[in-house]
Length: 407
Image 1 (tube, rainbow, N blue to C red):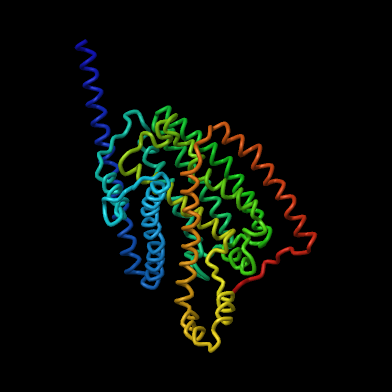
Image 2 (tube, one colour):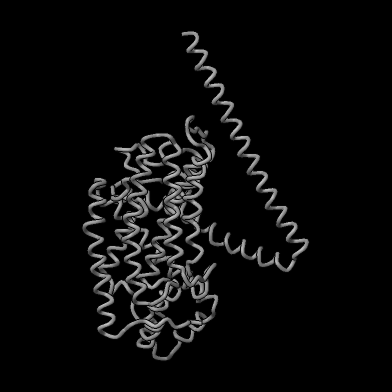
């Protein structure tokens, strides 16, 4: 008995020392990378002053997109809790801040100050790398989003293909996080999530292919400008419904959140994660929700387009002396047009986020076998049928799109 107690104490001491050594090594590596980054910026500033300014501008552009995205994610969590509370006849968060608006920052502070506990037998490198990979690839998709005419960090001609590739790579973070935790619950959750993402990503890519058939381009700006006459939700409404169902499943949201089924797998692939690394998964999940809502708006709801011509025609019917229309000339400036385009995209995306929350509050969770059966035997044959029918209609009416440069 004494020998077994001595072995247990030695093992606990050895594990504690190993964890401290790893944390110290991880912190020193992080400091080294920060110093190297600052040193490279300093050398760039001394020797290549002309190259420093574009680099600085690029960093500012990335921050102007990333920081509002993270703030949006924070307030989406509050909006979800308040909306679901109103649907379930509850109050929701209403203590921290006015109307509970600061609840997200209180939750973030709680998680950041929380003591971090990692499994003793986990692969710590992959255990930390999984959440980081998931967060990074969920944020990289915002690089090609056009917030207005020409308002994008990267106006990439293969923007849709880029977004599909980035969303596919985020699956590796989930798989690594579940496997490296050395827990059967986390591992089963990661396997479920990977199978679900692969299955419904096929549905999403097939639905996007139908939109590309109408525009003839993978550029997101071209797909938006092609909807000036009519939004694609009108001719492709069944495809929009299929795309929305696939989006809900792709973002692991109820009723398709089988990767996080609390009644079966505790908390899915993130069971063993806590404190800061749990925040990474949390930000990645809601960041993916906002991104998929923006993509849905771009592909089916006209993106940043706002029908000024319809508004002016309505005003001309009631404005006989032209006084109202003369006051609207201020909206013709590029700054105001860009602001209105961004607000239009934001309002449409907020409506899609509300529908996501509405679906979560309305439908019960289904079984995992029903989820896979619904994907492979119902949605996939319907999408394949549309892939056959839509090109036939386009060819029959001789409306094959031609890819014309916009600028």
